[in-house]
Length: 541
Image (tube, rainbow, N blue to C red; front, side):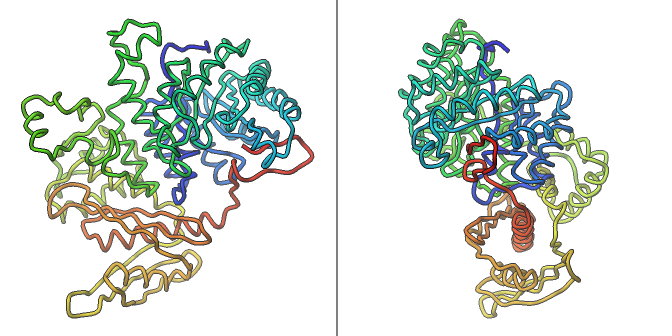
């Protein structure tokens, strides 16, 4: 691959760095659903996970490589520390993919070398060629990252980059790991790498950054002007701490301001050729899917995908938009897939009609999954007259949370009012025991339901967040509920949707409990916080 592909490559790390958001852990079915949607979105690279972290992560990456990485689909990438064991596990996990990449890394800033790795610069310069060459022995496409490049000594950084490229790295990633730099600083760093690394023409420059100071997207767009041609980002900007650079903001920034960025690609300013391969009309659906499955609610004023992104409250604004939308809108809502399409389906509609509409929405369900989705659709159609695309999306996105669940909710019933104590009766089945029922009293119906479920599950936790919003307008709208539980300083999210918000809350709570017991039963390690100690040369990211 040439240094400059003539456009910006979008490297999506929602399934790896995004999943490191507190409470955003995903099961295998959820990861696969997101990966399939990312492929429809048109990203160039999917970083599917960190295979060495756990057996579960390995299996998820392997399944994505097998089911999403075929044909002309996106490159499937796995993360690996600069360790032979990490790299070997990564190579095995991504093996089924037609286009595959190993992404390996080591810290280069003095603060990380001294306090985390406890290694000298010379030791790092010995590890880099060994591990990059080892990764190259498995795949043709190797990416190397200099962790905390934004705080690294530039001269040492140039040495590391030159060594990595000489050893076979096709892509060099420059991460602003702690979100420390400003746009001018980050742009200058990329520009100097282009000027001072002798063999930089043999690799693509990539950037990765966190949003601790709210500057990640601005830093990336400046980096593009200075020669970066791959952007590592996440849907909705999720990720550790303040999150990563947001995919939708970067893509639409390059789309809306294409005339401004074109000259930096050697094009005429009025060239209509897109600067990314992303299908922008899939952005809204992708955002909703990721939000639903991770439990990370999108703030209303979030750019591009927030609920208020295309809302106009001011009378002056409303008047202007009615006369000409361009007066106050720089993005056509339909460009990002935001529509109010309704489907002519009801309780008399057949399975074929539902399947056809789901396929139009981009969902390719197996026979069993379609049967379950159709059953839920019929149940909803009995309670709600008008079914929308968003209703169908809510049904399918919740459905993928169910596999491998230890707890299953079978009944929830509440009695409440202004003159009685809210009381809930629930029935829960447990793979480790018989089906049981109990009743509990709470401060409200949802509190009563959660108390009853906790009593049956026997898994201590603290409920720290409960949020509910309507899927669509109207009194019969489905309510989407997100619940977050905390145990041992770790967060676990659950999501569900139903026309009865109490039922949705109960199912969301059960989904969160299932994540809690599944996650705590695994031995997953964190690439940035867990250092592997052995006889071989090993680093932490």
